[in-house]
Amino acid sequence: MKDRYIKRPSGLIRMLFAGCVLITSYGAKADVSCGDIITTAEVLTEDLSCSSAFDLALTVVGPGGYLDLNGFTIECDFDVDGIFLDGTGAVVTGGALSSGKVQGCGFGVEAIGSGAHTVTGIAFEGNAVSVAFVSDNNTLSNSVISETTEIGVAINGSNSTLIANEVSTSTSASGAWGVILQVGADSSYILSNMVSGFDQYGVIVCSDRNVISQTVVEGNGVEITNTATGVYLPGDTFVCDDGQEGNTIVSNEATDNNNADLGDNNFPCVNSWVGNTADVVEGACFEN
Image 1: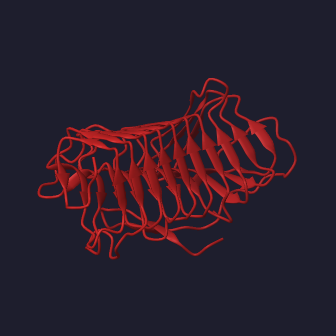
Image 2: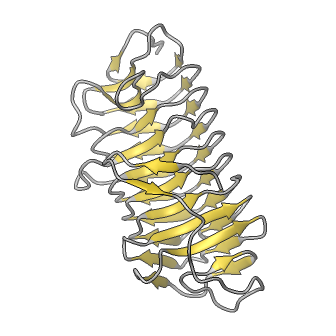
């Protein structure tokens, strides 16, 4: 496992670990219980409510670990984390109808280990950080994130993909961020998503060579003034502590965000902005 961590904007830092949980048999199980380590294909047969007696609800370890929520819900006590994906190529899916849910957790799903994990078709509701990619080459697709209190999707690892997700929260979740590509989250793809309703930034990029395309970013930033709150590349500022270059932001729709919909604080112009729709842009590096 890489010794890395997700940094929340509130300043809380949680060190990541493989998890000190109750270890169960590596063979197939009739039922999945809170604290299990899953290394084979498993299917939920009922809702799980995991209390603070567990550090996290479940760990899925690839390459053999595959968890189908089967439309059921994993609910945490909020101090408990939801699902850790460890090893290489672990998979968690919401089920055939994409109706499985992870709710009320500190981290909803956290991808650690060697990476190449897949998260698809899950409803995340009321988590502090809904999805965190710490390792590389992970994918989040066809999922719905709502009522996040801190971060919708936080990416630290490189070569991550977010495709066809809805990431939103309500303004009652004061200080929440939508999608953040932190320093080191290089060469990632944000494609065909919707990001809306966050008090802070919709999509903020602190890394290089990423592609953001065909994504709708609207109604973010009610708590932010004097900077862009839709899609924002802050440059070398306190937000990112490094500049950004080689990013391509193309064919997105960013409207109704506070102050500015698109912003690039890097100079000279080292990122490409092409074919985006926005009400207000901030910076001299735009072609719309």
